[in-house]
Image (cartoon, rainbow, N blue to C red; front, side, top):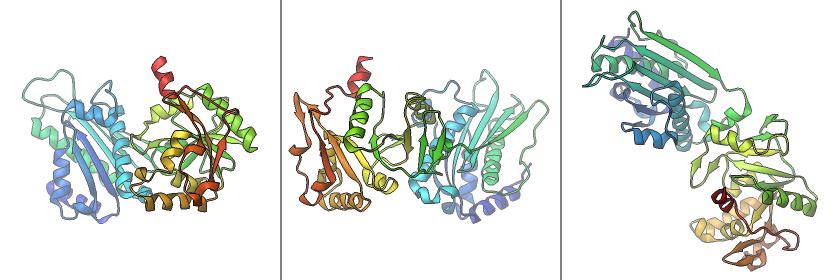
Length: 381
């Protein structure tokens, strides 16, 4: 069992390392955060910490209502979101030094709880996920004692993830248990989710390739759901451009945040055995151009309208900078018309800057027209 001097020394070691973390905790773990802040240098380690004290706050974090609020699965979901937040704050270039930490617990309070007192902790890095499931003996300790036990385990979990070799700081009684498990991320999809790679190409046989160079045309979308319009547009564009067409699903949305692994898997199932799809971490076309140089992006009128509107960039100068980046990467756009308010809109109606007109190609209406959107299809289902 750690004494205060041991904890202090361990946290000094943590703060001396280049790792940074985001901590999400619910039910217990505040003493661990206090311990991290008590030792000088916590600003080198802690990027952000949030106490998810209400169930609504935890649901908001993990984006659904967990089957169990205190479980390994919930701690893992918290750690994934914490890791994504760390990458957002520090940048994907530092992903290998970032940790997402999730802790959810049920401990003694001012009334008798049904069920066991327990804690689940998960720590995610670019290399994998480590989980800890602690079962405590009800009535053996008071609330402060259980909080201390959980927080010491949390400090140990962080130290272990930073590569420190220390003994477990727990003195468990008979009938109590701690299960520890580590999963290494080796498959490309998991590595994409944590930011270790930027793209994953998923072939019809479900074979996955990370960061594979792409040559051809790309049809990007949320594919929620994939429908005949997407498939028909891809087919027409391939014939019109004389290029192979790849579907692309960004797992990060500029406005809505990241998709969960479960949601990405669900959308991937629509393509299985029939189509190749690229998963990426880039929602903006200026970044896509860097990842997919020389490719043609197949877009609709509404997307083209935003691409040439200074409003969406925060000014005309930023718009031209973004379009120049796309041009420098050798990328162009094939624009399909779209029905808006009863009128079919086409590329020629848009105010394309003269210096960019050659980057935009119009797919004729007699080649392709679809008057039903994914939103309408979802609402009809």
